[in-house]
Image: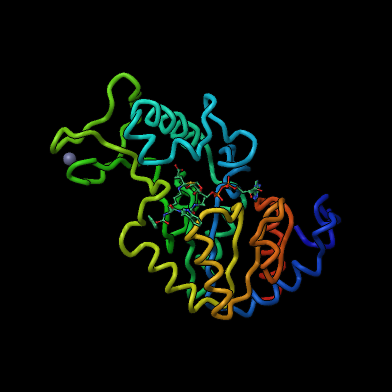
Amino acid sequence: MGLDTAEPRWFRGPNMNIGQIDASATVLAAATRVLAVTGAGVSAESGIPTFRGAGGLWEGHRATELATPGAFARDPATVWRWYQWRRGVCLEAVPNPAHRVLAEMDDVFPEFLLATQNVDGLHPQAGSSRLVELHGNIHQGRCTECEQVVPLPDQDVIDALPTCASCSALLRPHIVWFGESYRPGVLESALAFSQRAEVVIVAGTSAQVWPPIAVALRGQEAGAVLIDINPESTDLSVRADHYLAGPAGEVLPHLWDATRRRMT
Ligand code: BJW
Ligand code: ZN
């Protein structure tokens, strides 16, 4: 869809203007090294609830209370039930235009990295390959004893908690919870790329969790142009060089359309 046709509602919003899209497209079209950092908002239009927005509550629990090692130690059945419910939502979901545009960028830019905080698997499903899943993947489990990582069966785990086929210990979701360290190399690769990126695109994150946001800010400190896409302004939006206010599934296709027209 071109900018001069059917302008969506958010183009005329108080924080949004075509100049921001144009300026972002101009730097992107000239770039060869692009980093994207995504959060839950990118999957919102695929029907996956965000963590801190409406729908972030599950059976009265806040997601941020359940995604901790302490919650799992106290009550693994509840935490597993929550993950099993979320896995069901993720298995039903399909990538939206935001995921697809990021996969196209992966095909086009000579150097590209997508560092996602999302565990839903929609970025790889859309075709992104130069990808780091910073917080893991909801479809994998890890043994609490021998640390073996295994694909999870689509079975109901409420009555029988999943156990390790090798040592019979309890499995846990292969996810980075609050207070836990990142898997070796994962964060380092994103931070290293951020030092060389010319453009950093951040989309769909409340920018409350560190260190993923540090990856984006380090890129900006090292000279990259920082673009933030989110319908709501965050602490990162105010530091961004360009803040594109709107849903990622609409803004990213417009931005990409404007960029491709400048590339040809
Ligand atoms: C749209 C949209 C649309 C809606 N289009 N947008 C004090 C200060 C600073 C740091 C710390 C501190 N105390 C502790 C820390 C560190 C801590 C942290 O950051 N805490 C802060 C919350 C205070 N970080 C950690 O513990 C990390 N580990 C670590 O640092 O290790 C080193 C270390 C270890 C020990 C000691 C010291 C250092 C680990 C963080 C792991 C986070 N894990 C989770 C859950 C697991 C994943 C899962 O189960 O799925 O990851 S928490 C949760 O938040 C999840 C997300 O990936 C993450 C980020 O959330 P996200 O993606 O931003 O989602 P939301 O819901 O917050 O926002 C959605 C946004 O989308 C909103 O802005 C909407 O407006 C927008 N939106 N629709 C575009 N259509
Ligand atoms: Zn084991």
